[in-house]
Figure 1 (spheres, rainbow, N blue to C red):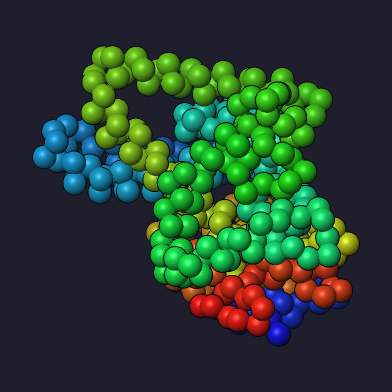
Figure 2: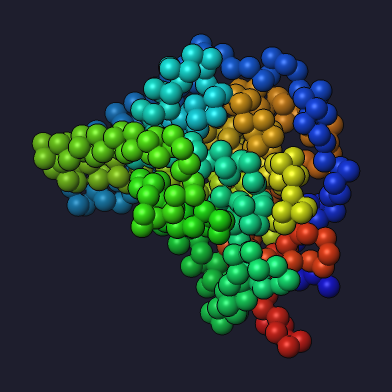
Length: 392
């Protein structure tokens, strides 16, 4: 019997059969050709939109005094500014997928500048993110948000899940959920960049800034090693600029106007990636069960609301389409989502749970996965079971 805490998907993902998953050709037949093409002018318009919004927010910030008594206001400002700045992350993300412009020089420069300003190594991320897309929800080859596995028949999985489940039961599910939210939102992104945290075992302990020993080289074959170093230059120049501004204006203004909002940007990034690819009743797949389209259709769209969809360019509500065809620009992805929702009703996943509820469910109940018998799927366990005893 399955030990699953169902979410707003109500087990839909567990009932999907291979025959419900369309082929790439069937997907392409549903999507008009012009949806697959980017338009430089339109993309630049959305970049300008994010820039104007951010300039307005910064202008508001400059009216707030840089004094200790205003720290509560600066915390509120960080949430506002970090939320709007996430729009730049999404634009850079489009550049990394080739969905920004047919002018690849312009596209690369735009993505490189935007990500560098957010202390993201652009080419390093581009490579690891492509691997993530290729092996979405693959329990062995997946590149991010790969779960711990309760030891089963296989020996290639990222084992250790039974201990984590036991730890969850010892401290209580509520405390475990709070701990996971804290660790993921505050430390998840830097831990991923620096150590490959949540990645599959085949990539080892990777580092997006250092593509050689003592870290794993698995993610950086051939020319990508050089590209990692080029990525470092952009981040280093940004840090030099920050040090100059600290020297000129002091530490407090830079923390208030830059580092506080940057922490919020990183939190949003973790929220999106975590909830795109994790849900208590969404399985992971073994190599024998996995296909690219099966993994892509295990991505989850969610209701972020009109304001967040506007400032974040619909990244959270059209992610299934994006995983099937990453080169679809965001301004076509929303319309394409409506088409696949109608054409592939059984396969398309949309969880209507509010985001705060979804985060709490994932943090509390997505602890470790266990292989099901003879079907190549791994499902989340919501409680600790040992010798017939069940501990909630």
